[in-house]
Length: 149
Image 1 (tube, rainbow, N blue to C red):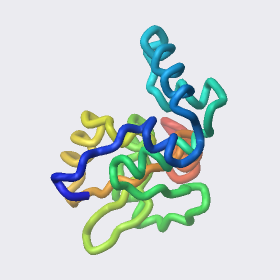
Image 2: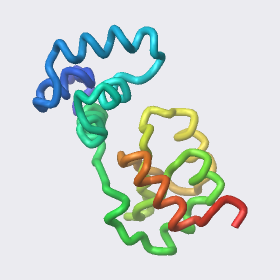
Image 3: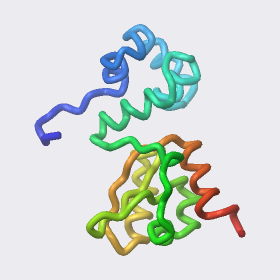
Image 4: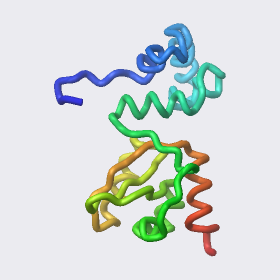
C-alpha cells in the first residue's frame, strides 16, 4: 500500500466482502459505544459475520497475510526462536523464518505494546501475520506446553 493510499475502514471492507450491510455496521457501532468492545467482536457476537471474515478484513486493512496456524507443522528450530513466556503472555506463535526474518502469528496485530516487547526481546526482525485467537492459543499449548511445564 502506498503512503498516499487511504486506509479503508474495517466496516467498509466487510461491506465490500458482502459479509454485512452498512446498516449492520451502523447498528454495531451504536452498540459498541456502550459495550466497549471492538467492532469486529460486536459483529461476530451479533451473528453478522464470522471471526474468519473479520480476520480477512483486518488482514486486508493492514496489508497482512492470514495464516491458519492449526494447519502448520512448525519446525522446532522456529519455535525455539520465541521464548515460551512471550508466546503465552501475548498469545503469539512463530510460524517460520525466512532470510533472518521471524514470522509470528498474532490475533491482535494492532497491540503495539506487545509488538514492541516482542521486537525488543528478539535478536532478529519480525513480520506479523494474522491468525485466529483460538488457533494461536491451541498452537501455543501444542508447541510450548502448559505454563510451568
